[in-house]
Length: 433
Image (cartoon, rainbow, N blue to C red; front, side):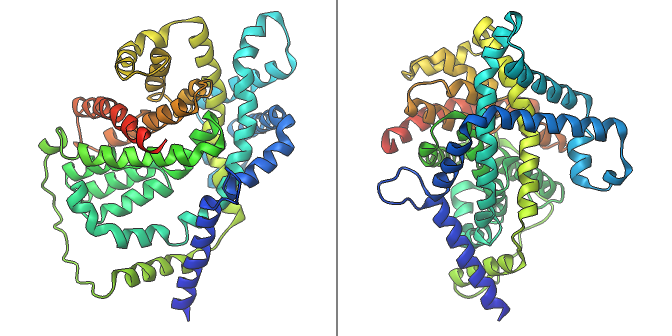
């Protein structure tokens, strides 16, 4: 009975998730999810800046209360400790973001005019993003928590070794990055490397060539950039480029020169029976354990928003000011601009700045791409930047595992991804766009 109910839960909830994320009503450019999001956004459109203000005011007040008054009755909650007992730099970003919002809403002074112009679109956009992320993450567990990852792991494990030169159990890391996030997948891989499950060569292949940009990150990134009706074109292109890049890169230096020895030899697979049935069984076991929780969804949304909204408003506003009134990013990105110009991109030196900004923060390049007129250019450059994967947070994770890689190899892989991703993305875009 429990076996049947587990399989039934997998079919019902995963099927519902695929329906919500993929199905489109006749004569509509939106899938079911986007129709719901757009309906709510249309109702609240005139209140975007109010939503952003309410969010930042709440965050800053709770930060003051928890960080400085240190209430003992809240200290036992991990969510509170993690998100509000924060370091000085995060406090600075939060209060800077709050000041920018207050200035935009209430301080219409001549001396603040440039600042308010720079922050206006970002603040309005943040309100829209808060709505989008909140609604999308109520439906995301249907794909991530009810066995689809486990089913894919069983069905695709025999493909991984010959195609991507890593063991079949790396499928767990790949689906983790797809459904949970690249940072979590990299951390999981690093732990497995330290335990001897992966060699240095295998671990670096998984962490830098086989960590697919997650669905939730793609939703977030595209919600900043462009029309949500184009999301699946963007994310489809991103995934195609990712797998093409991975296929090529795992066969190139520095990966081929890395140490391939490991302390734990792979176990023989003695499982018998139909692979599809094994996949359904494993998916059913996962689905049976899962309980949908509105509280968990809200907590996950809050974690996402708290981790990026203050940075989006602060760094986004400052980057707009730097782009408008200085040439700092132009100078740093000039070689990338020449490379994009070689491939015929319009505004190559402006677009090249996204490749610099992405190494600092996920959202900052989206601010530039948002103002590009051509939707195809937005899609292509968004796919290129999303496939860089290597920016500050992942770099710190990878470098934290002793002896895993060198700074020289890391830089080489980063440049390799940029050089290869541009022509590969253009090739796929000519086919599918």
